[in-house]
Length: 239
Image (cartoon, rainbow, N blue to C red; front, side):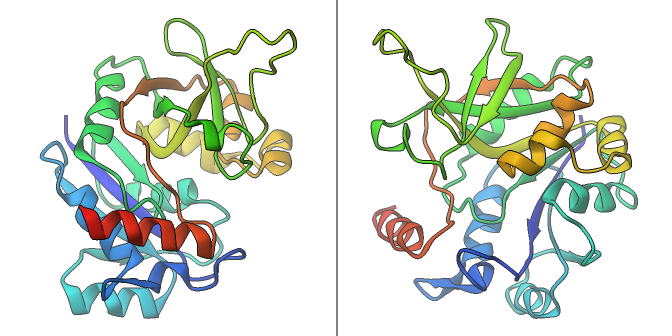
């Protein structure tokens, strides 16, 4: 199947201003993400989708494929939808622009989910490290035995009422969509749970579109804060 990866990248970030262009070892964060995604042999193309002329110019300077998209988009998924209007593919992969530790194995696990033509939306989880179980910046997911996502939350789910020590899974910032799912997402207003949790994937669940979740053995670190940036920089220096 033809698979195109899109990396939504906006310059306006609330918690870490201008984070897409913050440098690690002389390279902007968005470039680390682009090159990490580009390392997968399963992708037909990788495109940075931005609303910033400054990001676009940085991409041109380094030879990273990029496309301008509307500044009106409220989520990365809406930005991916715009790209899907002009570039045909069987599956569109959305890799968050602040996920520089993305690995080919993450993308392989994601696309395994999409081998079933009935699956409209897929994503990836990994065992949640103990330090992230209570961290609201690390999104948790609970799934049915067949991989169907039951819920995503910044809260610690499932709640351990009786001290049974359930397994916690961290949701990683990668998604795969078929075009009809993207079209429906873009046609719907921001949903109630989406607004509450600030998690765009909940719009799919609230509109009756199932999300199936693959599992990867490798964790990732999304860059949301200055501390995250320093943590990622240290990890990348050792790679």
